[in-house]
Image (cartoon, rainbow, N blue to C red; front, side, top):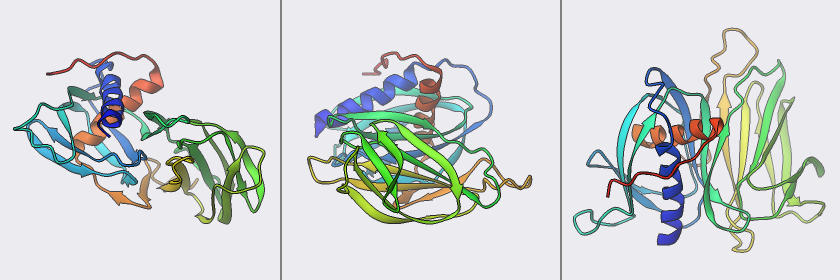
Length: 267
């Protein structure tokens, strides 16, 4: 458990430490997806216990946040900071940015990792919807089917595939690439007009805990009056404190521009 915890969070802090200290004005939108099974942590920010017991299977509501700097100390859940040093400690900068989803998940071989996805919040034509599937599970490449027919084929971790299509309800399932036996689903997905539905496959095929998480971004109608920053909900939703989204968004923006450096530990 501790090894998984350190791997995921060390990588996250490495991402944010690599960011330049530019772009301090403005805001960004971030959604955080926790898809690593059995990984619960406590987080302290600027000396305060800010996020106790952040649990897997959670998708946050999207947050619009000011740019800024944050000091973070992260402990395995239940650790008393008076009795132990943090497993991870560092500082993070949130620059002004885009709409991003940051996903803690397993690689195909079952190692914890972090992936960054830039959400498409462009306008959707009248009568249409947007469906995106993100493979973030410990499983080989898969086909995603709707009504028994493949719509996205040979999707590997950590890739995504998406398309705009007529709004409605579809019955979707996930099968091994080229196979017929579903490993996830079927599940009915409601795809409203002007809405982006993002489906995450999480968990592990070998461990038998594959699952689906759903993120929704609404307000993408082609009507000029629509708000395109996006709003959302989730199958399991909770509002994170500002520092968490700041940390995650900083990592997301770095990953979209390239580059990686090791975190400078405070301890």
